[in-house]
Amino acid sequence: MESSWIITIALLIFIAINFLYYKSMNGYVRKAFGKKWLRVYGNKLYFWQSSIFVSSAATVFIMYVLKWASILTF
Image (cartoon, rainbow, N blue to C red; front, side, top):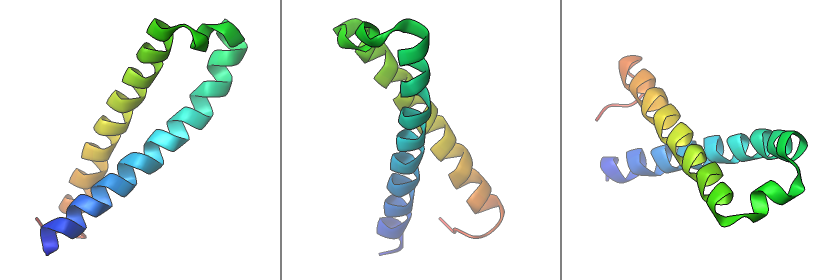
């Protein structure tokens, strides 16, 4: 039961960070590279790959901090 809560918390953190990354970087990419840049499949794949990498790294870091602060125990 406890592990399902930890997985749920990790998924919520991941989704929240991914959403914030998308909202902040999508506007920047459109302004810097133009509207057509994200229509190309390779560029779109690169954008989402970086989004998943940043979200994963931040989720691991936040989960580590929560474990270090004894907020989560696993």
